[in-house]
Image (cartoon, rainbow, N blue to C red):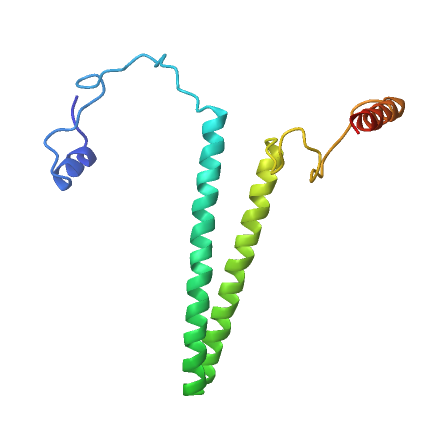
Length: 157
């Protein structure tokens, strides 16, 4: 097959000896039947936890370093008495405040993820501290369950 001027020009410009044409050096492979390994849910949870810890540590370090910079910039602004220095100081304070807000938002997002996946900070079976407890059934079923729980509690005493 004869090469076009464009192909020849590209080969010369890119210093390519010869470009393969379809069918000459290329082999068409059949579709792959390999099974892709699926990451277990626990491993994904570990990844989320690792990512959360890394992001949290970085945000905490940024907030801490930002506070040190603010202290130093405040001293410099007082000495220089320059409006520009005070403007930069105000922007730095705003940036550190945003980092602190991001740190709080990160904690909220982590809590949301934990609740979504059924992980809570309380011991399993312990209703103390739980916020999203629900009962599926009729009101009479709920009343009967509550009466039984109260009776069991009295029996234990």
